[in-house]
Image 1 (cartoon, helix red, strand yellow):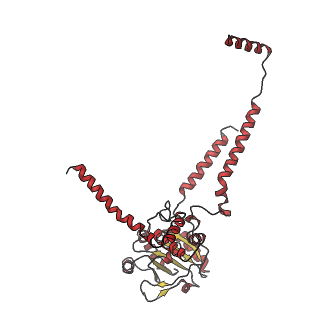
Image 2 (cartoon, chains in turn orange, cyan):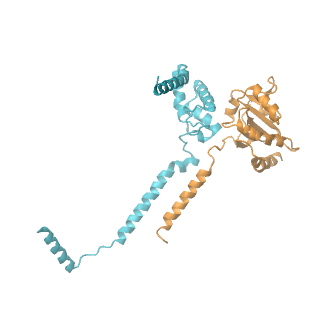
Image 3 (cartoon, rainbow over the protein chains, first blue to last red):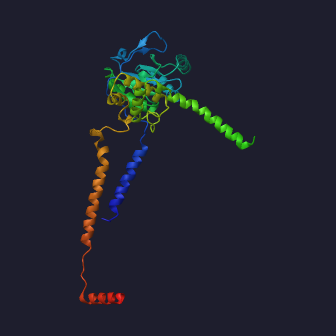
Length: 175
Length: 157
């Protein structure tokens, strides 16, 4: 063995380690909430301020909880994908959380770009968001029949994430 | 008024514009100095998730403001520092802590540097031992000794 072999191997290992580190996305912080019950809350709905929504109402169903806002740029990018998905015959219900928005802005946004949500909960002060660990809108949670969070998407849902991650899980959880 | 004077005046005007911002930032201190002091102490140890290299204390991100408000509420409720941190960790994960907790998943993180130091020292000792083996003492022959003495004498005289 050449006396340079060992240092060379060590050097290549270091480069590999750094390359992996550089390719990780620092925005994707693993959520401690995955595998835990979805935090309960009760807030007014966007369309009907008199009526409240609580995740308890969704027990027994597999559903998506999508955090959005009219001021959020990437939400617009994501929105057509959700609209398209909810038009499928086998789509699961999608509940929106209108996060730190003005009611009229949120409503106008849905009129303009389409409303794929069964309903949107209205989180004016962002307290629901804090309980769900929201830090970059849009974020989406997949919640199972028992009310446990099974998957969290940080940032917009892309067709790839939908087809490769969310839908296979939905299929498994819907059994 | 010449151009440089104008520039100076403009700079002063710009500076004075930024002053009210500072004043507003300090305002909450008046609320309850004890709570605010603890708020700053705790939130300096916490990472803002929006601007990840800023602490929760220093960040102007909307979420950081909300979280400071949340922490302020928890302090007023009489929660301890670790309870406040647990509140945030349970929602945002260990990533919010600048000082990671010591637990099985972070053992390597905490012990890693010492482990590397240990490996380095071990390698150094082995290398030095091996080298001292390779260098063999060869005593001078009689003839060489005489030559060396002669040379030394020459230098001394």
